[in-house]
Image 1 (spheres, helix red, strand yellow):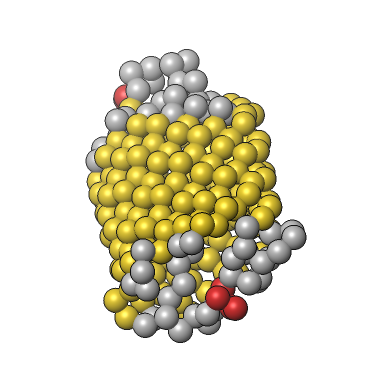
Image 2 (cartoon, helix red, strand yellow):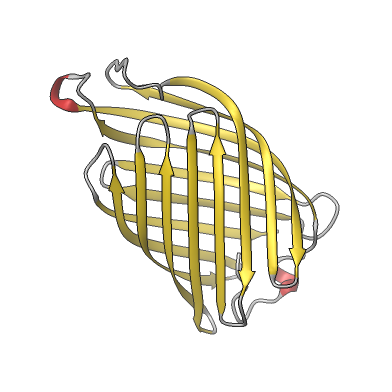
Length: 224
């Protein structure tokens, strides 16, 4: 996470833990998540081992010819446990993770054409890159994939500090799984409050099996 003016490395990265959570809402989907990371052998702002766990859940609707009315609804819960290593090279930070995850999708109506249902276990990998261009601009990118539901996700952000207590940025994301493909682009604002960081984003989301429409995200990051 970028450090804004008024925050110091001592109170954002030198701890060994951080907590994160958020809610994502779009036209035919809503999803919430929470997780935590731990650097067991040194501060978060140094190279070393990282352990991370995350859980989330929500609901969604999708088009299908296999059910009456052409629409089906589902609930989803999932969790993951990952281990990785953070590499540092000048203004660059790269974290590589691998581990296991489980997903559980429960459909309102049976849909034999949908592989993404029931409980699935798999292997998950994640790569996260952070680049502080200068004191004002920050670039991030991430890639992730899981064999549990055939998911692949790519995301990138570019932010600029516009005030000593706020940063504005733009984001883009694309994802695919056994059932559908999504893409989205939007803007966000990040504001630190009492040593914590809040992020509010909004934009437009495209979907292969649902209606296109706006999305909104609120997320929270807290070091310890």
